[in-house]
Image 1 (cartoon, rainbow, N blue to C red):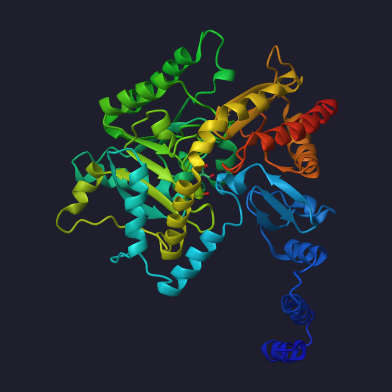
Image 2 (tube, rainbow, N blue to C red):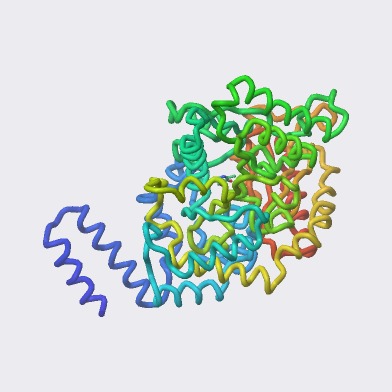
Length: 496
Ligand SMILES: Cc1ncc(COP(=O)(O)O)c(C=O)c1O
């Protein structure tokens, strides 16, 4: 089709109306068509204009874009780099969103998606199964703790959070404990945005606008040892104290009313909180004692981030359910998977019982095929082993930043670290809200980008910079990350 033919086709679609709106749409369509035909992508100015006119980005403050600021538009991904529409090549220090663990631009995944699209493009998992979902369930379980035996697929982490809660509620209703419905989770933890998952989330500022939420969720302390009361001599003592708060909450609410406890093996929100093994041991005992389902939310920590395929294994959490998503397909297709002990499925094997819950695109055949190809990459390239080998070097490299006055703490595990920013290292005095706003939203994102790094500057808890790069990188890239952070954090200090 020539550009003239396209123009006349568009005139037919939009008619000969002379309204400005119709002309604008027609002109934009023609420009897109012309760019596609000539093999040249839309230029940055056109993309900026169109994005500002029509895109509603997630978790995004839009006002700066109406006051002259450009949007970072990412056009391409290559390995551990992303490339924006102005041609700038930047290290993807966050794996997209904790998701592109094997790096960008994997041809194997594109081929798997193409092949599957030709073979079976779609069938839902509603009353049917298909080979890729069956193969993937079996394959995923081969990496999981032994007693997890069944997979409920979703299209992402939040849906798996919801699904686990609904399974827990129905399971207890079917097994004679109908009042066990409540969920306990940890302070500052993020578990998703749908009403149920948001109720389980422990970040007040994210919830206020959407109250009233689903009732019956409660928070207990997380394992932020850096901010723990100084009376705790070590991480183990503090961890045991934090675990005991779970027992206290269960007793306070009434064990007969509590269905589940959700915990991230390394809590993302607040800045990569790890826990002493005694914490998880004690949590496991408490859940056992009160028949509370222990749900490990591994949306981020799954698929090698911690240096094990699942962090539940690394910390011997022994969960009853594991939530996974994001890196399951290397983020090439949306997919989530909830791993469940067979015990919770048993009542659903009986008579007319069903679990009346599901999602059209859960276990989409193309996503499952991509996930299988992604797991092949993990096995072939020993992705998890790379994290295990290099994580101590990554930690040591980031710990060099301790000589900067603004760096209070460096913490995390695997390829998942946070650097907490302070005004006074000795007293651990944190930034005021105005300072956090100025640095984390005003100065740092732009400065990091200009130096060639995309990562997260966050103050859902105390202010942190977070890194979760693709699991394929090594010491050379760690040095580069440290160099950039040193430069930007040094400048940030001068702005305080
Ligand atoms: C721990 C955790 N749970 C749940 C979610 C929600 O996942 P999704 O955005 O795929 O719904 C996230 C997202 O980052 C997460 O980090």
